[in-house]
Image 1: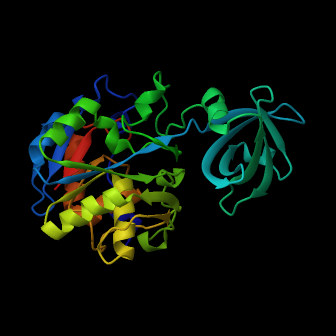
Image 2: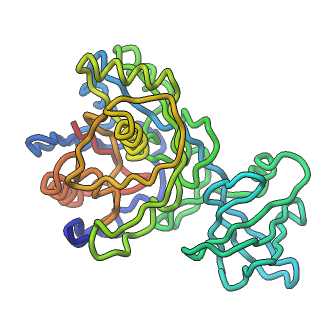
Length: 342
């Protein structure tokens, strides 16, 4: 499949630069995945499309303030280090700018020496493996020195860092937010639960591979970055019971979808309490084993995320919905509006 098949015209002004004041006030485009029928609603109408017994699966990963600005110990030159994933033993895979300043052996200091790192190696993709040294608790120092790593398509400053976290974010580890969940407030989730909808959580720590453009000419050539996930026994039991009884499982976001489908694929269409790394790439032709629907944001042209939703609802339905969203001036990407595919 040619990557160009997933292209569409997206005016830059439709990429939302700021979150809305009220999380639940975004618009909601509802897409029937079988017929392609579209409804234009508000996010608060989501509850009208859910029925008692549905299982709504949320990703509870919390975004790290993963962007650090430091100085090269030898020269004082500025270097930006973006944490991608922990490799254990204070070692991290990172992206650095400018890369040419960060050769193996280079030492960078942050916060007047509160935190230091040494570059150990250069990765195949041009990133850096670094090892940190510090006194105290690493994540507390990171909260003090780091800033939120907003996607490259968002140029505005974020005044309230918590607006790039879901209200249920708990497990630290993401380099980017699972943004479909940004629309929920605790009160709205309580209303949904009161209707008899089961709320389940998984953890998938989002890597920046999510934002990397597809460089290959054909879809099949693209290789996904691996991301760490965990599924609890409680969530496995909730989802398995729903599958057995014919109730719907609805993923909140592509990250929840990819986690559920990874484990479902490996366990014969069932979930198990497990953890691991996934590089699953879902595109048209994929057969879903767990999810029946998805709540998601509007993604960028030719992205792996557009390919994923096209696998669920069909490329023609998705491209028609996206072109309609552009025409109707829906807000796109992380701080944008939502789409419900059922």
